[in-house]
Length: 125
Image (cartoon, rainbow, N blue to C red; front, side, top):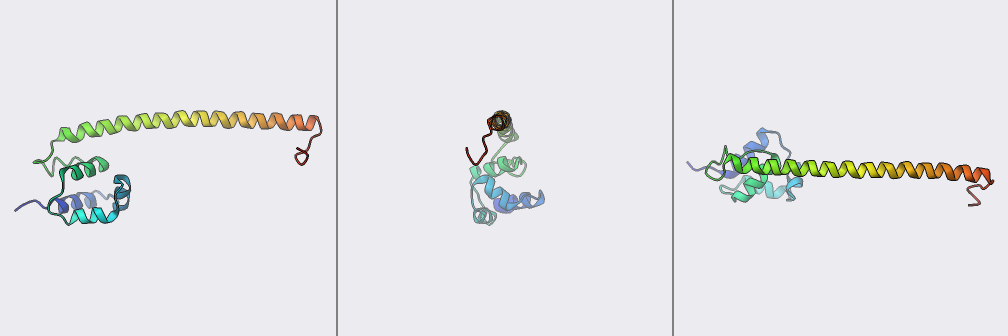
């Protein structure tokens, strides 16, 4: 009996509790496409690989004729490195944003003191 690729993929997705909506968002496809894949007896290896990488699931267990574990492990490692670079960028942006807000607050405080010193009100300024 031949493997039904769509059923196998659906079983993995449902067994592991993945959200179809979240998967479709991460893969940038509509939910209908994913449901259509479930009904297909054959699916392109590129699509299966993309699903596996997105879900961090090694499909070489289910599709040993298409993939080996190294295919997925290399991609998982690459994604992890990309994630760390992105996280580092977010931290750097947050640092500069916080610094800007702090300086802006200091400036506003100094401006308020100057306004009080010279008797300038907000309505006049």
